[in-house]
Amino acid sequence: MNCPTPEQLSAFFDGETADRASVERHLPGCAACRLALADLRDLRAALAARDDRPNGAETEQALVQLRRKLEPSPASPKTRFAPGYVGALAGLLFLAFGLGWFFGRGTPPIPPTVKNTDAPTRPDRSDGDFNLARFDGGGRATVRIVKRTDVPATGGTAR
Amino acid sequence: MPTDLENRFDDLFRDLYPGVCRFIARLTGDADLARDVAQESFLRLHRLGLDALGPEDARFWVIRVARNLALNELQKRRTRHRLLATVVDFFRRPRPDAEQVAATSQTHRQLLKLVAELPEHQRAALLLRELEDMSYAEIALALGVPESKVKSDLFRARAAVRARWRAEIETPPHRRARN
Image (tube, rainbow over all chains, first blue to last red; front, top):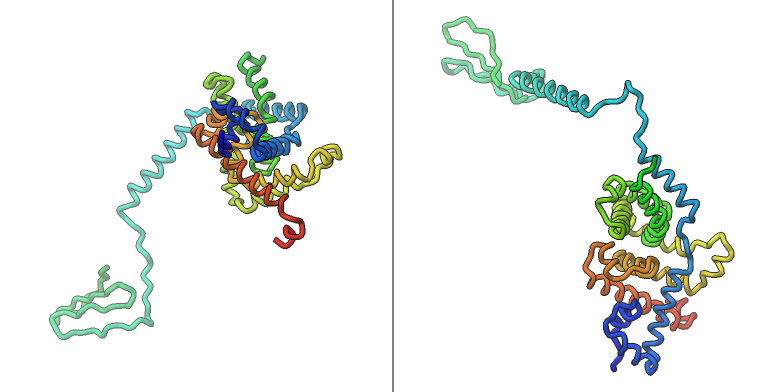
């Protein structure tokens, strides 16, 4: 038999190969495969050399801690909330926010108008029937509608 | 008064907790993390209910959950590089017990260092095989992978460790120092 592949030898070492007998027949005459198996044994010994598992006392202590975590926390009657109350409270809050949003959406807050006096302005033009828009440089236009024959009216703000 | 189910849970904890701690500690190089995630895994098992799983399935379930928790925690910390350093440090750390120091030879320490440098999935398979004495089918259940992958991971892990180990011991010390 040819040398088993490293994969076959690894499975043989673990007792997970179907063809165990042929590997066993091969080994006495093959120093390389025996060395490979010896290395696998060294590795196993190295991993098993140190038993760093928690001991019995540490395990019991961990179990006590776990049991404490599993106990329901004692809550005073004042602070204990049944799930139904919590759900109702959440529903009320949701309703309050919803109503607030619904009634508040029609009147969005008007940002304060700040006139930018430094911004360049377009000069007034009165060469028609109406005075044209006067731009204040802040994205807003002030329109004065003045008939030539009328007394100048108060200005309105268009957005 | 503890019920039969609670007693079974306690027995299972006593049976599995030490092994789960060791597996996670060797996997991550962090013994404290190992104890935390082992306990969290049993907490989740209790919430799930022992009846939901068979006794053997519970073992694989706990190992799988503990491993996932540990890896998630490590990912959160973004310590891939730190992990390696920690694992190496863990295995290099001198033991306080003189007897154990003697038992862990230089050869063993070097081999453990090489194991610590393996990819995580290979290391997990190797540790479950060598420390927990699990069969390939059991490792596959615990890690949630096909049995063929377990076989291949084990072979690759051993081949990698062996190749590096042979390279180290067959290289003369003066050349090793230069490398």
